[in-house]
Image 1 (cartoon, rainbow, N blue to C red):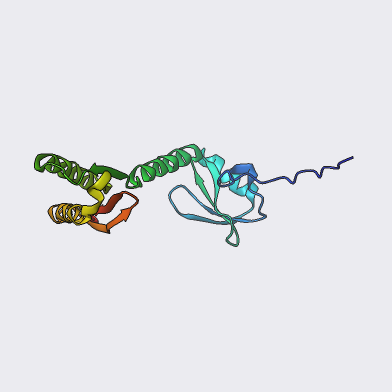
Image 2: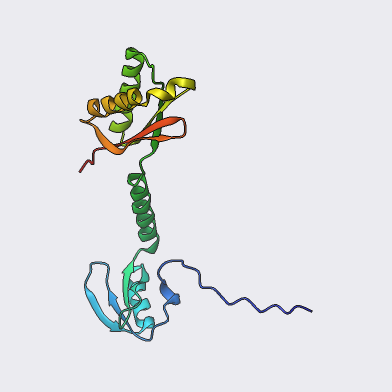
Length: 182
């Protein structure tokens, strides 16, 4: 028979302790205006919070004694989630966009690809430019390298070469990165 050990109670990460969850013997209390009310017992602190019709929230549990603030906990949680949501919006990472060319690309088609690359770089994305070789085209790698370097020169105002042109199988690849915006 297999014996199973009872699972240990794993504490959930729920945020700060509120009101009757505070277990310290004495706490330093700060009122809603930011003034210190002194070091009180949790019961005295809860009475003070009740006078303001607000919650007692443990904001610094590791200090000695723990610091508790009298505030509207619901409003605090809402504003905190709003800040996190805004931070996630601003943190969008750069994508890698790919453009595929051929060694014998026409001048106009090359200009269209260049325009796309410029737009991608201005939007803050990296651009992977790949020239695919078919059959005997692979003998003329210097033409492809010349086209890639020409593209890099023309796009120097919006981006720079992150990875020089290199052969990967039957294609030559170069990666352009946008300039840092401060």
